[in-house]
Length: 200
Image (cartoon, rainbow, N blue to C red; front, side, top):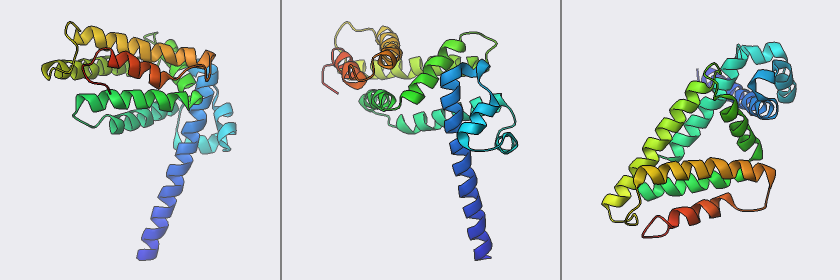
């Protein structure tokens, strides 16, 4: 019985690892070619798997895209678990630093977010939810900071949240064109510190 359980866990671990490799390949190809132009053949080749093997894990290209976004969502939720509003802002800055160290992920996000402005795009609803949720969370953090006297007088929480989100997404694009020219995290931290009565 124990041996069977061990084999089952080993098979599950191998399957999870293979799915992760496929999702890594998909994110790279989507970031390079966009969703519309990306092919399952290119993703399978990069992942070192046959198309039939790829389809065993993800039946369609849309399922692959959903898988990439599901993984991103899980990682994001894990990073933003704290109830302290300053911790949320710190996590956002850390996420920017991680993004700068992972240009493949940043490129994927940039290409997908641009493509998904079309309501017919399979990622449209994801980005609509993302921006709605992010705006709500960051605004709530600034409102909580204001109630605690930690937000500078005259700063509107929603305005600050929109400016922060716009700056965060914008500097990602700049970093793709000028890799290593500046630190996204340091720039965002300075911007946030200008809004706060205590530094991050």
